[in-house]
Structures are given as structure tokens and as C-alpha cells.
Image (cartoon, rainbow, N blue to C red; front, side):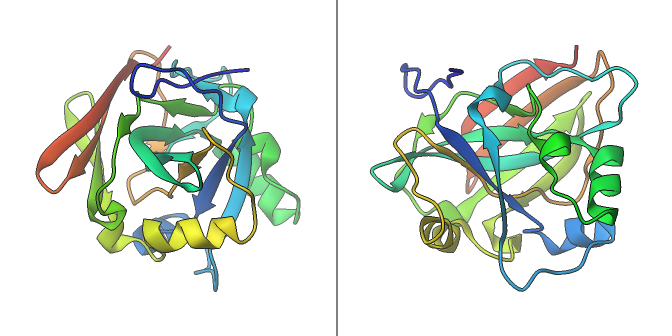
Length: 203
């Protein structure tokens, strides 16, 4: 099974619980309807990767997200995550009323920085995604439709979160396609304090 890095250890998450449509501006960006409750879906362990890789002949979009690692049912650490989406395939599946897994859960579809311990207020976190030196995404809990503290309760009412499981909290406006050779830096801040960053070059 694939692993992530958390405080010098390498836990193997059983699953990644993802939240869709959690920022109003991103909902508008993709022309989706505002949901009446959180949109939850799962990526398998096999989606986890430390490598950011384009898929030949396929439009793959990046989606930067504040991500958490869970221990004993609570947030134990935070990292930067990239939820990768085969956008054209997702649209065709949605239009047909079919599940998204083929567009969201493929191998390498969940790319993470290291995770660092965190015991503060998760609603005060914010992310930045910089591509080739330009900030393309910047947002935090204050712009989420459902903030992280409430998300954990909602997720826990539907899925058992095992030790080491990951939660991706949704992406703000500014998604776009992967291009080989582009340089990515994802950052997580608590206020003005940088907690963790990840760096990738698209292969």
C-alpha cells in the first residue's frame, strides 16, 4: 500500500475522503449547482503519489486543497494536497449520471506534500498554489461552504475514519490543466505562519 510522510513516519491511509464543491467561486467556475450538503467521495490508497504526472492525450486538472491526516478520529496533521481530475471524462460521466471514480480515483490522482503535526483551529488555515512563480489559487476555511471543523463531524457520520486516513477539503477557484515541465509549489499557512510546503515538477 502507498504511504504519506507524517512527522518522520510513513502511515498507509486506507482511504482519502474528498469534499467536492466546497468553495462558491469554484462552483461558479465550473458551472455546477450549489449543493444542499457536502459532496463526499473517496479516492483509494492506490491514488496516492508524491509525483505530479500529466496523462498523455488527456486533460488533467490540478485542484489544490488543504488536507488533513486523521488519528483517533481527530485531525493530527495538515499537508497540501493536489486532487487531480480527468476533467473531460468527469464531465461526460456527470452528464450521463454516472459515478466519477474513473475521473477522480486513478493511480496518481492524489498528490501530497509531507504532513506536519497540527492541533490548532483548522478553520483558520489557508492555502496557496504557485505555478511557475505565479499564484493561481489562494483561499482558506473562511471561504469554505462547510469549514473543516464541521466537515469532520459530517464525514464521521457517514464513514469511519481510520488512523492514517486523509481528508481533502475541497478546492477554490483557479483550477487548470497540468502541463509537463511546469513547477508547482503548494503552501499551507496558519494565519501568516507557513506550516508546510510541497514542491513538484510535472512529469
